[in-house]
Structures are given as structure tokens and as C-alpha cells.
Amino acid sequence: MKEYLGEFEELVLTIVGILHEEAYGNAIVMEIKDRIGREVNLSAVHVTLYRLEDKKYLKSVMGGVTKARGGRRKRIFTITNTGLAVLRSMKAARIDLWKLMPQLNYAQ
Image (spheres, rainbow, N blue to C red):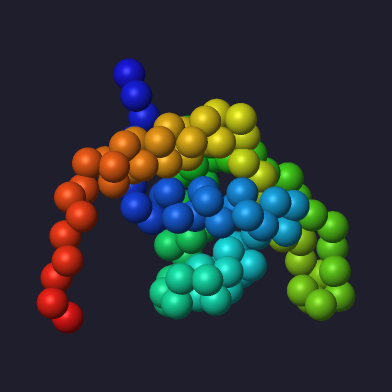
């Protein structure tokens, strides 16, 4: 059975791949805002990260304690091979669909 991601899951998974070893909650929120111009809630990102981890598309480790974070540790997420495979599959499906799109010229 093929797995499908929702739009927000796909966005978060892609951003984790982009950020690589710097992918943690707040960094993901900021990257989405900077690159997409979309305001997202940190708790929505966390819920999505944990759901993607449950699906084995992400894995996480706890980072070190920092003074900047008041002694708290941050959870760092990285994309797994399975997560990368599902993103590649979705990209290929989208490209196939776009190839079918007629070349329409709409008056602006």
C-alpha cells in the first residue's frame, strides 16, 4: 500500500530535509515563514513532526543543553531513507500531472 502525505506533512518533511542537522521546531517554523511566507503554529509543527516520526519518515535525537535556551535541550529531526523515498515519489507524481496540464494562456 502506498503512503500519502497531507500538504502540511509534505511541507514539514521537505523543510526537515532542507535544514538537515538544524531541523528542530522553531527553525522549521522560521524556515516555513521565510521561504513560503506562511505563518504556522509551533505546536502544529511539533504534532506533525511526531506523526512523521511515527510513520518512520523522520528520526530524532536530543541536542545538547545551551544557555541560549535556558538550559533546555532541543529535539533535532532528520529525514530517513523512507521519508526521502516518499517525497521523491510525490514529486514524480506531481511532475507527471504537470506534464498533462494543457498550456493555457489566461488573460490577467
